[in-house]
Length: 346
Image (cartoon, rainbow, N blue to C red; front, side):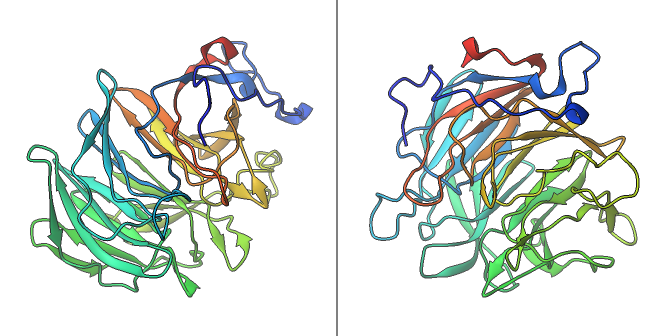
């Protein structure tokens, strides 16, 4: 779905603000107005949802995904590189089958994309991308159940793919060793780690955080940190809905969702867009030090799920996505956490 004027907003959402949520940031700007969205360059054709993305150095790579008007399956296999200075450039196509819902991560100077779904087939393959030669190489297949809508991330020199869906929801994780081109099952999940589909993975200081998603029709509320250097590797954090006797989570009314997107900027992570019964636009900031969430400026474009996000050269971006049925998007916007929202920038 393409705007006729990308520098003009579709509309600006007005959000009812509960008194309990209208806390002020030290700058004097209410939390619900903190964080500015600034229009950036849209990705090249076609628009897409449920794409895969990874970051290598100062460049982000976005590819694959779903567009309802493409071919028989609506799935894509193109790849685009984005940098702050030069914008978008098309790169070599992904050599595997076109797909959406793939998992991706980067290790060192290489990107990796695997798993996913083409509307009929569910995949377990893995490919490595070399940005210097602009070449893809087939690697060892993911050894778990083929799946889609899994999460991928890398920490401490290893890659990981886990959760996702194939007939049933899953909570297993597998580790990929790039030096040996081998997979192994990770340590157990230390208790009641919910199975989930359409979750997000956040990486901060070489630890991964797994949050949101859906399990058997219901939104999951548990939130976990993964550190493979510790035993156990999984540590449960505060739930993302009001389940604690304290008051800190009284306002956690709409963090739960699936097919959201999340990114890290300095000492905080940010979660936005997705689905919880209907498409949501609320944006939440997560403080790693305190294990607490607070509201930020809502996503001001059309609601969507399956968007991508990344941070490169200190700049954070959110874009693409789908309405879930007949609409996909090509827009990309920068999120500036320290600025108050200004609709003139959009």
